[in-house]
Amino acid sequence: MNHLSLSIAHIALRLECPDTAFLQQLLQERYEAFVSAEEPSPHIRIRLQPTANPPTRARIESVKVRPAEGGWRFVYDTFVADVTANADSAEVTCLHSPYAVDSFLRALLALYLPQRDGVMIHASALRYGGRGYLFAGRSGAGKSTVARLLCNLAEVLSDELVAVRRTAEGWQVYGTPFWGDFARAGANLHAPLHAIYLLKHASQHRVEPLPRGDALRALLQCSLQFAEGAQVAEWMLNVVSALARDVPAYRLHFLPDPGFWQQIKPPPCLHASRHRRGRPPCLPLINRRPITGNHRGIAPTATCLPIATPVGADPRVCPIANPLFVGAGVASGTLSEKGIPVQTHNVPRENCPASHTLWR
Image 1 (cartoon, rainbow, N blue to C red):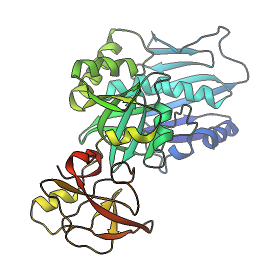
Image 2: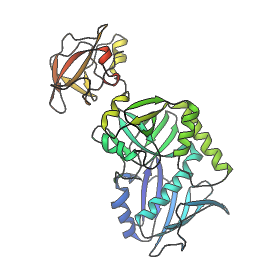
Image 3: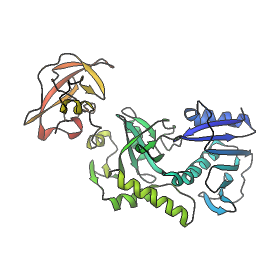
Image 4: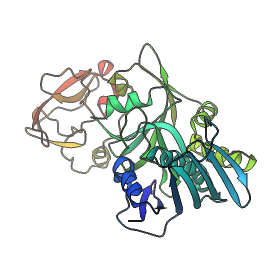
């Protein structure tokens, strides 16, 4: 094997290297989940030349990317690279270390994406119920904390750096192999971007809608870019402005516990549209898994809403109580995939967390 084909954010990368053992090390330590099953024509071709000694003598704290003849010059203390103007080809001399390659790929994709309706953002991201949730912030904001707290509830796309791209279907958020304190690669998945949350440590959980201008400034501060120049600034501003315009953004004030998830509205139950159009109701859901069991007359009223939880759980605080379609009502049943017994409650509307029910 003298090359490695990867797919990150639907970008096909071909890494070529004369040292096959080094490519195998990259595969095992970093990129196994992002190996492309096929080998399409690459969007980016990278030729690696690993060395035993650092390619630069100076200590450089941050990647430097400056215009050079015919393209760009990337300089860091673990690599030096010459990259074409549109960032689709690179010649890289790097330290014999997966960290050096990882650092270069982050900087390269940060330059590649804004030229193609995309951006790399310092954020953790989750896929839940078929939708993407992005939690952005600088170092120490709590990105890895969010990933750790919710990793058993949702699929973690990354805890450090995600790719966001505008497609024909709208904005999509993509998992990446770039990790932070969570210390594991994100899932090689993507999802429609449902909402953006700017993280802020606080004494209580609270969600605050952000005006577009505030969202734009915050997202620009969290966007990854090392290249200099007016052209790059224009690319970044165009992409991030469109993102702030199209996707709702919020300030998430939170404590380091999973209770903040209850402040975030889960994705709506698809069965609700069937009910409103007069179609026969489908099976009720918890976490989008069907409940089987005894179905009978519990339905929303003027003062109460039906909530499903595991038997014995408090419907006001139980984290598993997600939107439940109860067109015919459920008195008892079982979460079929897990065999968990569930029950329904008629909860007064004023005590009902909005995140726990589709009814309003």
